[in-house]
Image 1: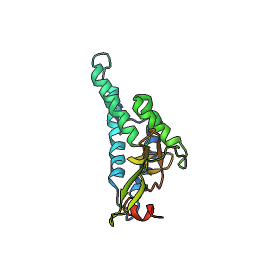
Image 2 (image 1 turned 180 degrees about the vertical axis):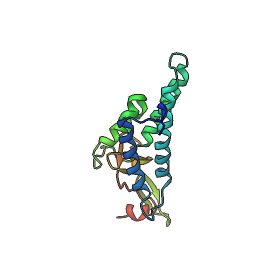
Image 3 (image 1 turned 60 degrees about the vertical axis):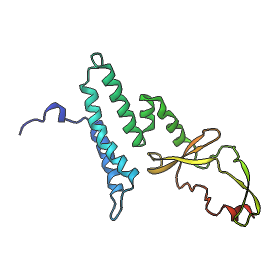
Image 4 (image 1 turned 45 degrees about the vertical axis):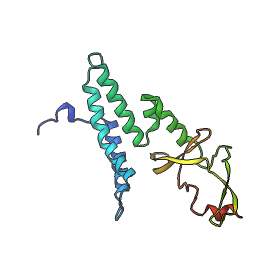
Amino acid sequence: MESLPDFLKRTPEQIASEESRQTILRDLHAKGAVQTPAEMQVGHAMAAETAIRANLAAIDRTEHPDAYAQTLSQLAEVLATQGKFMEAGSLDPQYKTLTEAVDIDDDHKCQCVGDKVQTQNARGEPITVEIPTEFVAAEVFSEKHGKIVSLVVCSRCGLANAKEDFVPADLSNIEKKSEK
């Protein structure tokens, strides 16, 4: 039997990473489950990570510094897509915010208060409503939570928190809420 070429040989770390990836993929492809677009993105990022790491190994950083920097940026992006925010943050500072957002307790909330606005209901009566400060900026995979979570950001202070089972403010029945 022929030996594998060097580029096909895998290290124990690569084998462990692949086993972890396969576990996540099995969970994503559970019987009868349909993947959300965010879950599909995680799967694509897992596949892309291997190729990007191979590209990094093949690029001579002194001869092609721009290509190397671009490939590092791509690696940071696919790592962040997989919820590996610590590693992504070490490559690109923009992902450090996501690391902090995942580390914050899901119940933590900033002290910002929404604006109170005077308006009128459908009958023309004056009412006061409070505009929520939190909004979902993105759906991200969190290794800590083991699933896709909402990246919730405060529009006032910018606090970001990756929350499981976040329910955004329901503004569809704002009139009923404000009259209570």
